[in-house]
Amino acid sequence: MLIENKMEKMLLSLAGFFLLALIAMGFKIQNDSKKIALLTTELVPDMQADPGLAAQDAIKNNRDSKLNAAAHAPLTNSNTQTTIKTVIPGKTIMQTVPATSSSTSSSSTKKTKTS
Image (tube, rainbow, N blue to C red; front, side, top):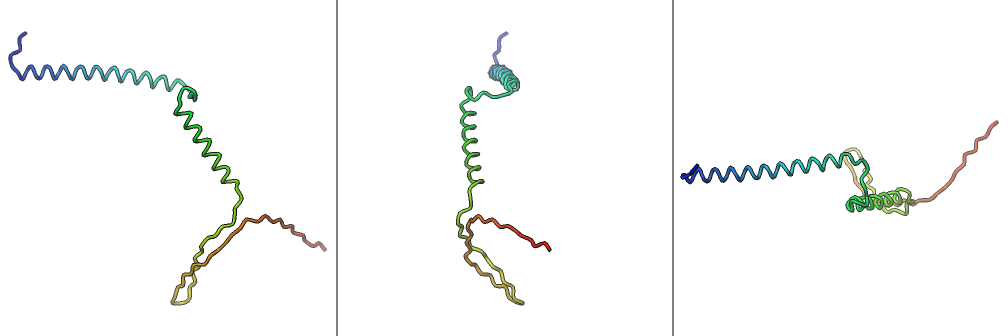
């Protein structure tokens, strides 16, 4: 079979190139599907085998410990600004005043009289 037309030669070479690309992609898709099947069968990820997973777990533990420490920390003295809105008929006055709060523990007991 002798091809003399340049256009036919170019189209055949282009078709051959696309055929090779499709074959290569087919092997890659088959390889990826095997990897996905392997990952779905593995129920518990191994931290020693995956350094990214180990680093992610360390970051999660560090974040959890900081959040727990913040949640259980006592409130220290806090200086805030509070806006008070006073409404007089026909006029509204906005006033910003400093407010402080502090953490003090107090215990109170109620005693009732019985007669």
